[in-house]
Image (cartoon, rainbow, N blue to C red; front, side):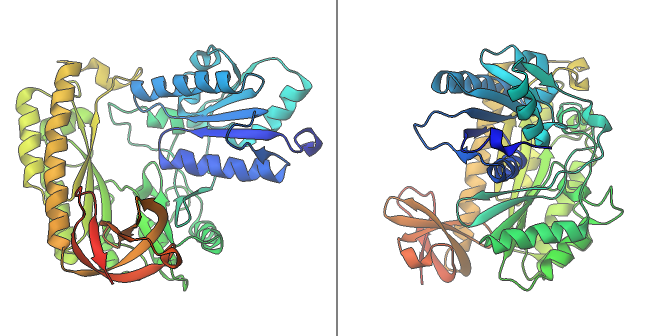
Length: 437
């Protein structure tokens, strides 16, 4: 039983690092704490509790987490500092050793934060609460708001793929999800709170249904049947789970946007095999062709990693040639970071940090060209834009259905509304397309 008199009007500060799942989970924790009397600390106020939701996808992510904890310890010297998330799950002792950290909560313990806070109020000793995430079967729903328009809805958690470079299964556990009925209800709640666009998020989103004997496409169809005026996007989906049936359905969908985010990771079959990915470059190319067959103007973002162990110069050049041949819109480029406990550490040769940086720059250049070409193909067309609350100088910013970033002189009444526009031309710094009504 939670004694909420302990928490009435206590000020809490949240700091989230990493993926959209973390932001969704922090938001859900925030709602839970608010219901028990906590008040979010305003800028400049001293917090009673600081909650840091961490990422550990790379060494750089770990470093940023440590920096954030140290900064919060200086800014809020009297606060109870609670660290949770992937870094806390993977390296609890390392996190606990950071100056100022009072509680370390693993993934299983993250949503029981109130219980652990109450225990600490009653017994102020520093504690680590951490259990084997691979044994958990529980799915914790979460949803976060990004500004006034876009919400990120967690529909799936965990992963059963065990790619050789990745620690996510050890940080988040096995693939699991809520039911379609429960997920649709969560989407309805977000719509009731003002969502105009909901992004379906997960560690391995397309694996939805594994624990409920359902299918991701059936979730898509159930959400598409909602009567409300809402847009949906799929955050990221493995190519082997992006079925032709799903692509064809999305082509005629009422609510789902023509926007795909697909992990490729490398354009070399030899390196895909080293990574233990579940497809070939030929399969991936066919998937891109299928998307364009049914949805010619779809935006396609692709994840790639450079500099993994075993990626020789020959294999990297194969990847470059393959990626250049793809009709895609953007690359999300990541430099490989060695992670303890992964099978990738057994592979040779090692790519130097300087070479990883060079390869990253090569792919960033290719990405910029592809994005520019995709944008230029859209100029002159009409589309529907959801205007966001942020401004770029005196302009408001929004995104078309196929994720073109656009801007227009600020009109207050149009914020958080969907307007039909014509895409006119590049803005001055070529960061967005100007539109006319």
